[in-house]
Amino acid sequence: MIRVELPQHLRTLAHVSGEVKLEVAAPVTQRSVLDALEARYPMLEGTIRDHVTQQRRPFLRFFACEEDLSHESPDAPLPDAVASGSEPLLIIGAIAGG
Amino acid sequence: MSKVRVLVGTRKGAFILTSDGKREKWDVSGPHFAGWELYHLKGSPADPNRIYASQCSGWFGQVIQRSNDGGETWEAPGGDIQPGPEAMKGSSNKFVYDGSAETGKPLTTHQWYDGTQHPWEFKRVWHLEPSLSDPDTVYAGVEDAALFRSTDGGTSWHELPGLRGHGTGPNWHPGAGGMCLHTIILDPSDPKRIYIAISAAGAFRTDDGGTTWKPINKGLHSQYIPDPNAEIGHCVHHVAMHPSRPGVLFMQKHWDVMRSDDAGDSWHEVSGNLPTDFGFVIDVHAHEPETVYVVPIKSDGEHYPPEGKLRVYRSRSGGNEWEALTKGLPQSNCYVNVLRDAMAVDSLDSCGVYFGTTGGQVYASADAGDNWSPIVRDLPAVLSVEVQTLP
Image 1 (cartoon, rainbow over the protein chains, first blue to last red):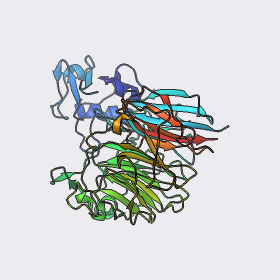
Image 2 (cartoon, one colour; image 1 turned 60 degrees about the vertical axis):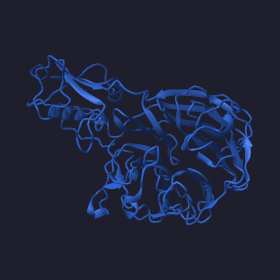
Image 3 (cartoon, rainbow over the protein chains, first blue to last red; image 1 turned 45 degrees about the vertical axis):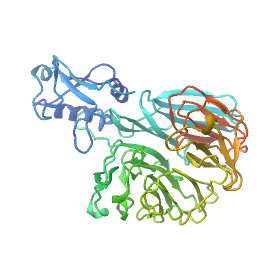
Image 4 (cartoon, rainbow over the protein chains, first blue to last red; image 1 turned 120 degrees about the vertical axis):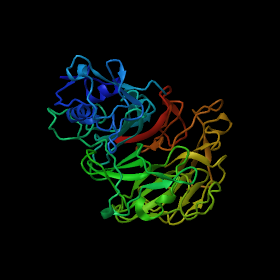
């Protein structure tokens, strides 16, 4: 199971508390995890990546295993610890603005 | 006994204020969608329990919410949690400009602040206008300016591309608040006639249900644009109509309060004796089509009331002659603004008038503006106010 930690506002929107756990077939990448997340929680479509370009929204970043993965290719494999479920993929909102 | 339900959108959530027909005691519900910007909420005239809400955020983009019980519970249409990865995808948050050749001229750029062309980029929904007859049909005015329609209760959205594609689109440009389609008026006497307004392009009308559009800005004069009498480019702030006279329109422009008696084909100024003709809101009394309300704001550089006095101005003659309404409103040290979608009227026998401020107050008058009192004083900055009159 892949573990994903959402920012508070998206947890509220998706009606979840704590981490989200997803079945994701290999290869486990940003794209495959987000595809699975949006399929399970369609209300999150467009809130993490743009509907059309599929690019990460500018005020969100992706972290895992104490690394900033925001600028990695969406098709690059995520760290083994994420793929094995021992570490979560963190989706973080910028601490900026009101 | 009749009730009123006031739908308030703010910078940090939505609030629902309810009262009986006396409009003296109010229940306050909220914040709904706490922490998000709620640009607009509006109920369906065909089913008052159906309410649509535009929820957005600089971090997470646009979400459309829908209630079927008068705002007690909400759902993102089509966004139900799905059992597995093969499940159907929702699209209620998806606003994609129509660039297809089949539906009109693909239009990809508009004028930017510096005069260059700039790509059309969806940012948010400013205004939701439910159909007068079908609870599942709703229009959305968006930034960058375009008109979308849903016929499935907000689950999916499709642009009416004839508006951007009618020819002047490449010359539209943003105002200080962005290039937003903020006003949608459905003609109750003609289902195929719709008026919309865009900052800063102007007002437009369709007479065929949204397929073709034309600018309706003749008579508008804007000294801040290269050709003050241009066909488009005017910063229209808001437009109002009384349902019994759908050919008569009242407009609060960036500067100037305007009136049209021919469905927008021509306009004339009715600012008259207003202390300043800059402002954002404008609305019409529910039972008196010649009674109009505005809130004058000092200037485009000073978005607060003149002399620090919050005054609603009322004309009982369709403009030109205005009286200040001050009872119950702060008459010193008041420096709030009243944004373009933040005034509404109810349709009780004694017409109620409501407006919200950037200081978080929502003021109500149960006697057509003669006396005012705050329903709430300390909300986040108010972006929009709508009212439902319920049996």
